[in-house]
Image (tube, rainbow, N blue to C red; front, side, top):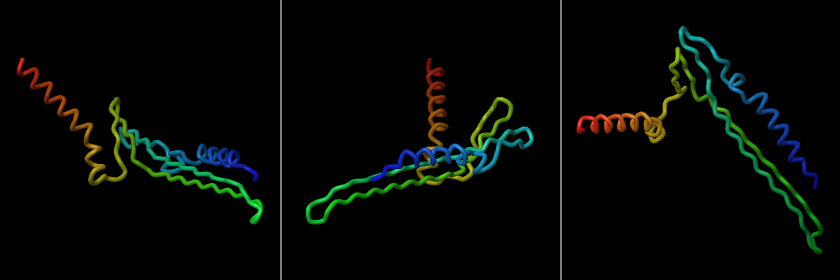
Length: 123
């Protein structure tokens, strides 16, 4: 059985380097007034491969193989800069548990600030 998995992997890698870029999915960085907007994407990739051979006196010898691959590209949003400040603007809004996890850093920061203020006041 000829194994050309390495060749396929090289071709897929070359394709991803050339095509799975932000510029080819959602465009290049652009200016909007005082703001600079940089598109952000997510690229996911998965491979699977299997093969085998065997036989017996009754059925003879056999071999086989299979491979599969899949990938997805999703626009996530924009990194937006103005002067020295930078923020992320999502291209879609989150719901449910995802939205709660996205708010956790802000909530944790507020909680820590409140605890620090309480410590200063009590001293």
